[in-house]
Length: 264
Image (cartoon, rainbow, N blue to C red; front, side):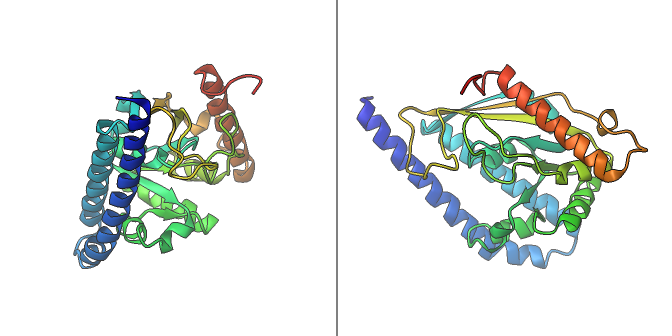
């Protein structure tokens, strides 16, 4: 396929994907959320909503691959599907990171920005699936711990928003560390990478790369918080130590895997 025609097709396919995502999100909010409100059993309701969202994002990722917009490489996905609750901590280079992780994880809950709770395409999704808002730090830890106790893994991007540059991370916030210490669950570090960059903080949706972008997901070995913070350590200091250790761990592996380049 000629390069110009290929680019035009991927631009069209990208626009179509955003439209489908927006329309389906709006329909979910208008139809599924009201049904969820009258569902008699909270636990089964959340399982059903999570399964629907997982299936939708799997289909969306598969469609993006089939249309030639993206490619996906995943290493260690079995750890994300083990069924053991964990806090999945990942760097956040692109808008699609959460879409890909939810497509890979059948039983997952997300921490989402407070702004998404009023987004017309997302408000029903985040409420029906009982995702966790980052608006209230104390409520954040309690809500995450409750979801972990219910058997869900938590997807958390501790940068808070997409990475500021291809070779740099935002400083990690400590919410995930407080949650891990409170709930006593392992931290599952995940590396996210996109080459060439797409849907970054600096790019608009129509800034389509010159070739299909490749999303790479590398799931590292889980880390128990007891290795990073002794039980007798004060909670604030323990959370600080865990945050620093996990941020350094992920950053080092981003260099080791070649996702970050020395000297850039």
